[in-house]
Length: 93
Image (cartoon, rainbow, N blue to C red; front, side, top):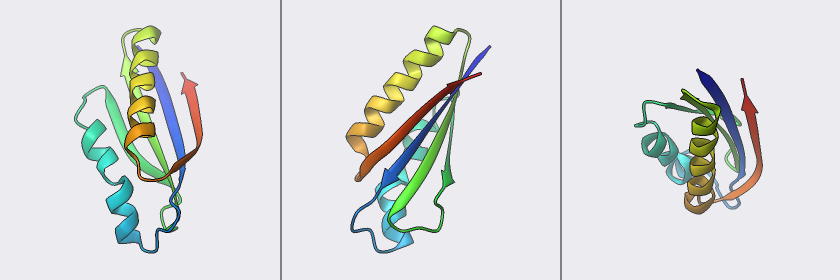
């Protein structure tokens, strides 16, 4: 079994409330959490309006499978989040 951790740090310019923040990035959990090989959570910057950090834990039977799924997640997040991706960190265990 192989495990990958993908962590995104976002800047959310102009975001003035936690409610607006949840509207901008809250859909990440619904979009990716349905896949049984992926766990998703907001992992940092919980109380800031203008920033957010999200982590994805990806599990697969091969490193290639995990890397492929991480790439798919990264591509989709880059296209769908209403904010700027400041940093993406990939770790493999």
